[in-house]
Length: 424
View 1 (tube, rainbow, N blue to C red):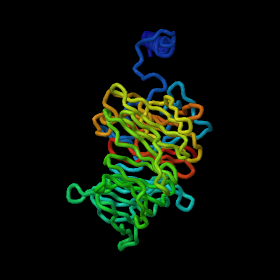
View 2 (cartoon, one colour):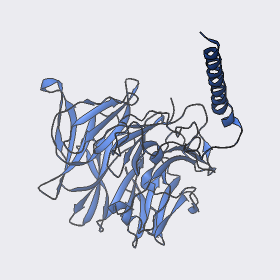
View 3 (cartoon, helix red, strand yellow):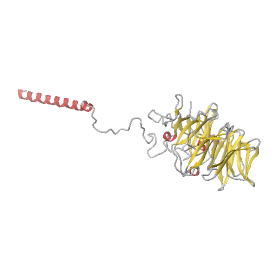
């Protein structure tokens, strides 16, 4: 190779080395000078997507088992508003969806040491059962009973009272158990109670029922065994519009049906003697929920296109504003801690005629779940039902199991059944 070619090659190699050095400097050093090159497009740290990544695109339904350590918003922090204490201990409440179809009513009970849920599918009336943790539904019956509107279970979850319409407007009330059948699945067998029972509730023990039914004199209230056989009349009224609840084994509470322009009345009725005690009266839009020891009544009254929630002390007949703004129908009293109540609390209150508009479904809520000590007034935030389910969750029909480590509830908007595991 002559001398000129060697010089050209040397020059080219040198130029290539210089260009490579400049490129390395540009890419690896110039970008770390501290001056931003362009605005960031990443979301702020700790935020999470507005749509569930586990949900198919276009669907508003969350996964069937939302077992993501509910109470954690996905960023490692809880959805806890200011002013409320967190639940003590390391356990984070877990929200789980039990059904993806409407249900008529469910129960959570102890089945040989395992917390178990039973429920009735609203459309066909089939009975299902699932472990409260694994959420694997097993159909127990194949008896078709179309359009069951209400279902009430006895204390052991073995018997159910199903209510449905027949021939258009006749209310049928069917007391049944799941009996063994052919093909591996059972069938509902039982007997009918009186036709056109207007309202029915179950005793705290699950062994008795109380129901209201029209009579020539107005309305009567009947206490009976769960199968409806042993019965006695303990209440009568010339008025027809009443609703019952059964807070304590010996006392039924009866409240006039609420209306935003109607004065309401609430009374206790002794199951054994029929003796009546008026608790609240002359309150517009009155709805109520008495504690299991009968010392307190959570109630709401209509108030200027909204409502006010209050706590009534039965012993001294005094009322105080309640810590949270919610309706009694969205709460359940603890039987272990008598002064504690669990409530689904709306994030905000739309303007409306309460409780009428909420009953009729013209407005609904997006709820959080709270635990409130009614002695101290201290609220404890549990979980944001709307955030965790990723839907507008308007909770009703709250119930606790015996140990009170599970809370069963229904979304009023679609009648799907859910649970919140409160403790291990």
